Image (cartoon, rainbow over all chains, first blue to last red):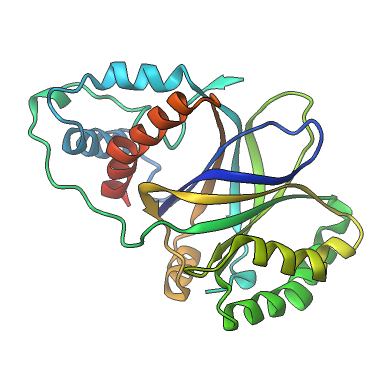
Length: 87
Length: 194
């Protein structure tokens, strides 16, 4: 994984009629070459989980609870136009 | 509407067998504090795509650089959709996202007034802002890499971006629960993978 950024809505300044009403945007940069192998990617993810979830936490229950309150309005794949970036 | 699957991600979709028998280890802490963004979601017709990008380069980019020099902006990133993998049916479409990270201490309303007053790409035909919002980074979940050196590396590695638009039930309890999940589990987990 190259990068990750999670944003939450503070204020909607304008929304086109009919647009989904999301309140979170997550932007995750991935390196296709490194993530071609799903087994290796899953193993890396499982290792990360083991490192961040305390032993007394039922992660499956936590995840289920989150699933019950959050839905994806839309998921995209995208490229960044680096020539237009300001750094 | 679909159930959550992405950023919740990489982690939520993975096998978790055995996790409860391990001792939690130290996890990385994002190297930046909370930041404020203005995000614009834009629809551009395919026939106008080249003109739109050219307008951004010739008109908006110098303007953004000026705002950075004035201490209002920190960074700008422009994303173009390459494919939509999930969507609610029948909703308006969009294919560009401009995320503007404000400089530390800068006022979002001042930035919004500046772009509203000026009208860059908005004054050119064929581009329509679908949504404009002020956002803040979710605590412990910011691993953005947006330096010039990072851009070079991203280009070399052919980095592809997943952009997820997530609707969390709009109650204080649900928003707190989601934020806590991100802060305690998802964000730190992602930090280990970045």
